[in-house]
Length: 156
Image 1 (tube, rainbow, N blue to C red):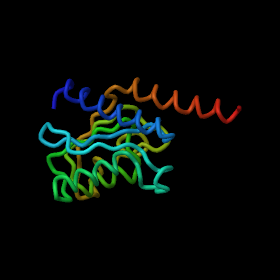
Image 2 (cartoon, one colour):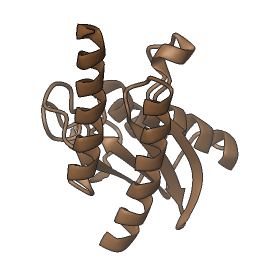
Image 3 (cartoon, rainbow, N blue to C red):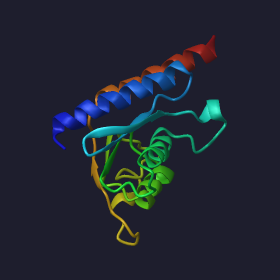
């Protein structure tokens, strides 16, 4: 994938993040791309679904597996607006993704290089490429705006 491809697919993930914000969810979005084609899109739905695993990238990987009719997501790249947590990075290992491209780093829970690096842990049975910082300013701004509005509403 080229840097232009990464930006194009990250823009789709940002669209998904906006859908999450519109639903009152933390604005994180994800897309899964296989052989240059989007095979799944998702956004956070933890509050809506009452499901702690309903993270954008987790849901997108499950949808991609269903669409591709296989649990191994070899040949796939996951684009997500925020650095994956331990759960989602672990699923990337288990699903055998080729790469994860994320926007903003997550200093509180990032598991693809910030707090942990599950993507390149030699103790695990799979490693995947990570490309970070793609449209990071836009992704971070989306998150800041959401939480700013939430704090303002709480004060009212």
